[in-house]
Structures are given as structure tokens and as C-alpha cells.
Image (cartoon, rainbow, N blue to C red; front, side, top):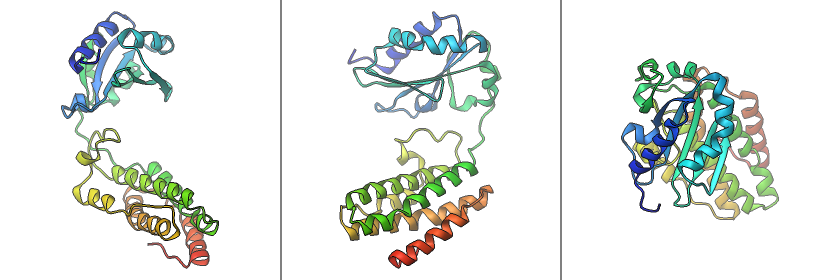
Length: 265
């Protein structure tokens, strides 16, 4: 169905899901619920079933999904979430929950497709921006410091191709940190940074140096990522009450200073 519209796809979604009486309600999530979708947007769905039916609905989901559209890729992630890609490369995701999950969801970021359990009225009012998650900040900072600590090994062994990969990891961690600092109710997915991040943050990401497999380039890229990441990470840790990995940072500073004569912010 190469010319199928999103509306036609959703009509079939509703038809198939309604026919399964175990599914009490279904909502659109993501950009299609927010009204910000474009032709590149995937379709995100949230279904609610009775607790006693959940395991069976999850187990039966591959067959249910095939009634909606065949998949060239279907992955089960996070227990009861499925990712799909159709032969026409339509990307659609489904998460399956239970009624007790409903009050923790916001009506501001969900659009009902059908509701035969009266659950839509139990959604939270919404409007509360996401705060930085201290556990997430600690995890990002710890991983950043760990990867940066491999730089002396990379340069010492002249493993510059590996260094390019390391710089890519650090760049990705900078992006994730910047996203964590955005105070909106629904931050959405990874592929709409232009609409999510402040222009000055986007500009700073765009100005990170390109990396080639050479000593100077790898060193410059790692240093640039550290200049961008560490001040923001410390500020977020302070604001959120996160436990900053000080011992790891101190050990890293000593190692970089001793091995490379390098100082980080």
C-alpha cells in the first residue's frame, strides 16, 4: 500500500484493535497527537488492557500487528512495547499498558482513537514540563567521563578510527544531555531536535568539529565535546540534586593531565 495515507492506516488500526475486545482503549501519542507531524513522522500508539489480559495481548501482538500491516522488522523492547517497519517503510510503535497507568499519563499529549472503558476521563490534566532526571544526568555524566578516559589509550595506540567512534559517542551524549535540559511536557523522539532544542544549543552542536581518523582531529573533537558537555552537566546536576561522580572526574583529570597534558573544563 505505497500510497496509503496516515489517516487510512489509522482507520485500519482502529478497525483491527476494536475487534479485539480485550483492548479497552487506544490513543495516538507523539507528533500525530501533538499536531506537529510531518510526512516523515512515525505513528505511536498506546493501548490499555485489563491486567489479567495483558500477557496474552502482548503474546498475541505479532498476529494482531500483521492484521494491521505486514512488517519487514518487528522488535519487542521494554517488555510490552513493539517497534514495526512496514514494506513501505512506515514506522509505527505500540505500547501496551493497564488502567492503573492511565492517571499517570497526560491528556495533553494523547489523542483518543477509541475508548470503551471510559478511561480517557482518567488521564492526568497535563501541562507539567518534564524536569531533569537526576538519575539520567548521573548516568550520562558517568558514561561521558568513562569514554573520555579512553582518549589516552586511543592516542597512545594510534587507534584513530576507534577515536572517531569515541568522538561520535561523546557527541551523542552531548545531544542527550541537552535534551534532558528542555522543560516541556513531551520531548518527543530523537529525530526532531530542530523543534526541541533552543537555537543557541543547536548552533553549538552544529559547530562541533568534524572528525577524521588522525591524532589532531580526534583530540580536538574530544576536547570540544568536553567543553560543551561538562559545564551543562554540572549545572543540571546542581539544579536536580544529582550526585555528581566527583571521584571519577578527579581520576580522569589526573589521567588526562599526566598522559596528555590536557585540561578539561
